Image (cartoon, rainbow, N blue to C red; front, side, top):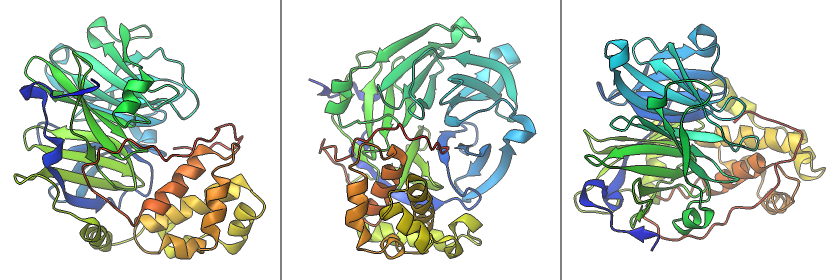
Length: 399
């Protein structure tokens, strides 16, 4: 069977996790991509893929303590996605490190000093063929075996193991350990957006996140078997996953600037229902002192943009409209359906059924339609209601 009961050391009880906190990070306006726990402090290292920057975030105070921009010390970083905690490096006198994976053109793992946030010069090129914007989304690290695990989003979905013991450079030792599309779909994964390593005391498991299905599953690395439990995380567009083993806390980071914290409920199940979750989302948004200009009500899409998108099938205008509306809806400052007008819902559904529509536009549309549901449940439904659309539009927007 695809799903089995994993060994006790690896059997993280996903069904006993509940949403205990949800925040929107004011210092990030959009494109939050990756998250990992600094095991020394419990703080979070966040990556933003456009414009590229790395942030140090304190989950206890819900505040950003440090931001490093690409132009400062990260000139070689391109399209930053997932983040992995590496811990101390004996070859650098015990200096602590983390890694970031780059998605598209470079397909690299880049190592950083965890104190200075500067690149150490150690990099690993990953030899996989990818389509534009469907590349390497997440990364994690097994410190015992000195192996990176990177996930490719789709076309096809893959998990790639890269040996750090082989040394940095353009030809690291690597192996594609999972690429069975049917097996991944059987456990409810239609894409791979993030990955986190769970230590099982000599063996390990991977938490795998799908942003399309908003779901997390657990896979035993040695046997490639999947655990029976799955966690549906809700949220807007989940992109990264991290697990703090010392506190038994699961973090989900997502676009545009969302951070969700899941903790264990001894009684099982989840404490938050849809209504309380939406309420918490509004309360969290209300604590932001200033809303970035791009997400203020002044950036509502114009009637001309709406007309060009719906009536004239202008893909640029559609993307512009949906980007603005999703940013507004994320802060709960506006109702997305009031911004788009209810009569346009059917038209947008029809547009997203066309083969020439960009996948990113329709992903934004689906996000808006599902935003207010905000469901957080343990779900065994494998149905995939995503619309398959081609990605051959000439318009390219960073994600």
